[in-house]
Length: 427
Image (cartoon, rainbow, N blue to C red; front, side):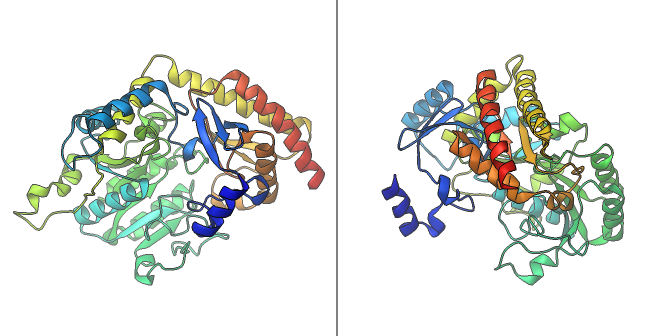
């Protein structure tokens, strides 16, 4: 494995595939996955709570997905045109989600949120968008504003998260704290004449919306003809069949999907009101200037769509969501119980199969609250867990799948107790 890690350092920027680089002390190269487990090139086995950063809600190499993908690859990998899996998957998604009207596929969540914002600007004739501090909407310039700041913004002025973003782009983005309905409503009202959309992760990373917050966004946007966009890349078909809109009872104008609908392949979608989505109809391009370009070479790729269809088939089976919540609650309660017994200030935030250990006793309502937590302890805990065969994102979210078992959770809790003791010794 050392040779592969050296080759990665030599030929890949940062020795990794993006922003996710494992600490050197637990760096590894993966070889295969099966159900809730993954194996590195040395044969070491891990219980996986990363799940490819979320797409593998059925676990690794689910037999039905493998069979569907093999069949589709034999028929053709891409056509740049209509194909049956894409049509069938579009129907399933539109019929399942509360804001469903029309759908446009894309290849990534970044592409999805970018397209949703473009549609909103075209539809409203306005340019600015409001997002929430700590909300993650992908890697485009409008999204990378106060997504992971180290301090609170001077609201509503955002803090760019990366070099290379034009100043003019930052000037078109407003930012507010999550779970502050009064400030959000005031920002929407104050900027209504220039505000095209409000985009929000209804479950922001792993912070749950407090009662009334999403409802306030819905009321304020509707009152000022501003579009409400839910980024359901994480929550869609994960925390409920109808995603966050079903779970929290608030219906958006547009919603962006990915991860779960992809079956582990590059796929995303924007879904929503017909009067908004129809702006991307290419037939409008020839007859009117009221047109939004939203296209890509891999849109509606049949392999990804075939995998997505199988995923939705499995998720729609009776008892799947109650079991996901049961196994997630077992992990959450177990982790918090161990921390409590060890007198370690650790809570597990999140909703259903999206959890995150946070080393703080304070209430976590937004990103700034999270900054007060002990990030070093969270990172150390993650590293200790990986050492003990539990694959997690250090200081990040835990994703659970239908493949995780009670036995997996029990083994995880045994490792967690040892890991928390190690963290305690180093505090």
